[in-house]
Amino acid sequence: MKTLIFINGPMGVGKSVVCKALLERLTPGVYLDGDWCWNMNPFQVTDETRAMVLDNITAMLSRFLACAELDYVIFGWVMHQPEIAESILNRLELHGVKKMHYTLLCSEQTLSQRIERDVQAGVRYADALERSMTYLPLYASQNTVKLMTDGLSPQEIAEWIIEHGLKEC
Image 1: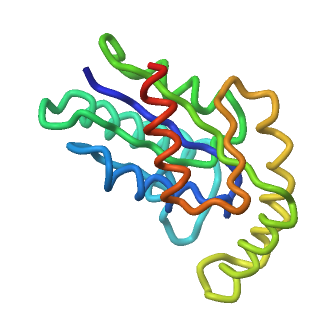
Image 2 (image 1 turned 180 degrees about the vertical axis):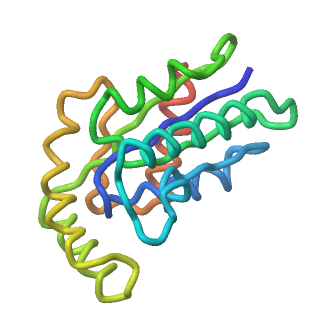
């Protein structure tokens, strides 16, 4: 049986590194970062680009789920509104697929440190901190398993998901 794992949370919380750590341990598997579908220049959020990105994400996830060679499909993206994940899931054929959805969170102080480190490294733009802080409270009401990442390595978070989350499915 296939397992579809959604990982969401604000920018800078550690989604990408946790998804990569999961991919190392969950084989055969694949990881799709939703940001890869937004990697355009100039970056523009319009109705047209938003629809294109959701179509591309859905198409890729559908193909991954249909591939007999894969047992695990990991998808990481900000998904700050529950409607985003719901719209993706509603477009997928999920018969016989275990679905797991985790939200990675951390304290404002930890988030600030992580994003400022990324800005200094040239990985993020300076406005990322303000946007990420704005998104942080939006995750509280989402129907997901919440994981606090403060003081934990990506490998520890991935191990928790594997040890606790996969057993509960």
